[in-house]
Every structure is written in C-alpha cells, then in structure tokens.
Image (cartoon, rainbow, N blue to C red; front, side):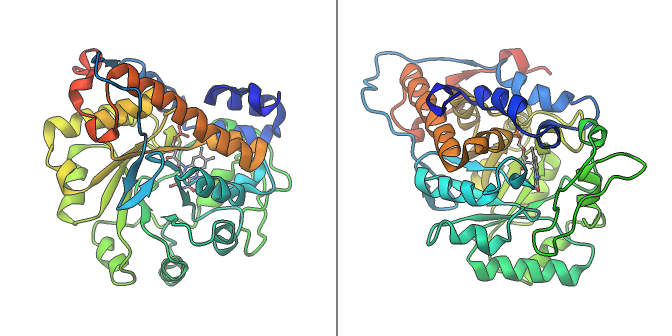
Length: 363
Ligand code: FNR
C-alpha cells in the first residue's frame, strides 16, 4: 500500500510482516520465550480508562514537550534498536533524518547498523541520545563512551536490563544469511547449533558483571547525563535516585529479555504508590507497547516525561525517512484528538486524575 493508506502504527507492522525479509521480521518482532511481556505491554494500556473532562475550550492544542531541557514537538523518542538496516539500507540514518524533521529524538543503539558518526551526519546540529551496552573489555567500553561524548551526545541511556540474554525463539528458528552485525568491523552473523539467533551472537560481548558502582566509573569518563534504561520497580528506582542519575527509562526491553517482567504502565503505578518522590527527583520515561497517541497520553498522565517507541519505527522504515515521519504525524494527530477529548490544551495539564486505573490497581 502507498504511505497515505497507512493510518495507524499497526498498519506498518502488517505491511512489514508481508514484505520484509523473514529474518528481519523475526528479529524485530520476536521477544523472550512466550512473548507474554511483549504482548501485555500493549494490552495493559487497554485496561486504563480516561476520565475525560468536557467544556474546556480545546480549540487549540499543543503536543510539545521536552526531555532533559531539549524542546520537542512531541515528547517522543525513537528507542534504540540494533540492525535497522535489515529492513532498509538507510537504517538508522533514515531515522535520524526523520527525528530531526519531526522534532523528536533518536536514541542511537550501541549496535546500530551504521557507524554512529555516519548516523549523526544525517541530522547535523540536531541533538541525539546514545544507548550504551558496556563491553566486557572495559577499555573498549571507555573508548565508546568517550567517542559518544565527543560526538556531542546529550544523554547516555545505560541499558541495565541485559545482564542475561532473552531466549528469543523466532529469531533462533530462522537461519541468518548475510547479516552484518558490526558496521565497523564488517563482522557477520553465523548460525550455530542453537539456531540463527542474532541476539545471542550480537550480545556476547555485553558485561554481565555490571553493578551500581559502575555509574561512578561512567561518570569518571564523561559529564554527559546518565539515564538508566530498564528499571521495573520501586526499589531500583530509589537506588537510581540515590545515585543521582538524570533519569530512568521504565522498560522491559520490549519483552525481549526477561519474559514476565511487568508492563511499564504497571511499574508507573507502583512508583506512584511506593516512591512518588522519584517523579520530582528525575525525569521518568517509559517504553514498551506504545502504539497509539492515547497510550502516550496515558503514560504522560501517570508521570512519564516522554515515551519511547521501538518496533513501529523499524516497521515504518520500510518506507524510509518518510515512513518514520508519517508514523510521528499519526501519533501526533492521535494525541491531539485525545487531548481535546480529555479536555487539555497542553501537556503541562496532564495528571493522574485524567485516568482511571481501577482495572489494574490490584494486579
Ligand atoms: C531493541 N531494544 C534495544 N534496547 C537497547 O537498549 N539496545 C538495543 O540495541 C536494542 N535493540 C533492539 C532491537 C530490536 C529489533 C527491538 C525491537 C528492540 C529495546 C528497545 O530499545 C525498546 O526498549 C523496545 O523496543 C520498546 O518496546 P516496543 O516499542 O518495541 O514495544
């Protein structure tokens, strides 16, 4: 279908399922074991209701927001995802152009399929964020942190939920052929006795010995603000506060690592109950299963400063930069419509009283 016939984020997925290579779709869509967390990430948003207010003059609404002081047209970021090239040779470069033209942010993955500097050249003078996997070889990790700093990154999203690798079965089942997993060395993926899992081959360098004291180590290498990606409960949110990071991204990695890790929206509710002070101490972001403008509003009402969208951007890349731009505009339009219908003109007006969480409060 032509791009103008794509009217929601699910349409992109449906087209990708039919037209992308089997391996690309398997790698993108897969999640750990039963894929329960992946599926519930989205379903849980459907159990949250709005408490719409009426008669509040919403003729003009404004979706703008910010992250760490960076103004955004929509408080949305493209989640870091490796191997964007599998669906479109322009990969993360096309996403960088779309982020700039639509006024959102891209979080560039450590395992992006273009060299980081090449991606940035596509959006000159525009802010970007960087996701960090810490290499077991700490000298290499230090070099990467300093490289990202030198490139002008505005925040480092340290992924903390990858101490083990998720068993992603549809990725294992489909053999790999010509997938380059390191754009710098040209290293290719290979099949082995366990299958064709890109996750396993790509993730083998990640340091599983990371601990809270490593935040000080990162700080010794860079002044760039640190955001912890992959917090899922109040205890770890409190530790994040004690370590004075700039933010946390409440995330279960799109259900790709620990299956039965809780959906982000439930974690937000837990934070409200058990450490509400976190929302004042730092910026809280969420990702996982956000597919509608209404999902974005629900997350913002429950305290998120901005939200991340992962897979839909990869599926939208089927249509290159324009596809990713179209996805942002779809989400923005949906947000505007919901904002009017719940009775707010700007995102400064969001608050928990605009949602009814009765269905999920005792989960
Ligand atoms: C990811 N994710 C991820 N996270 C990360 O910290 N570093 C990475 O390199 C990747 N790579 C990656 C590849 C693919 C194909 C996917 C789908 C996801 C997780 C990602 O940043 C994010 O947390 C989830 O994708 C959010 O969920 P949704 O929006 O995909 O449901």
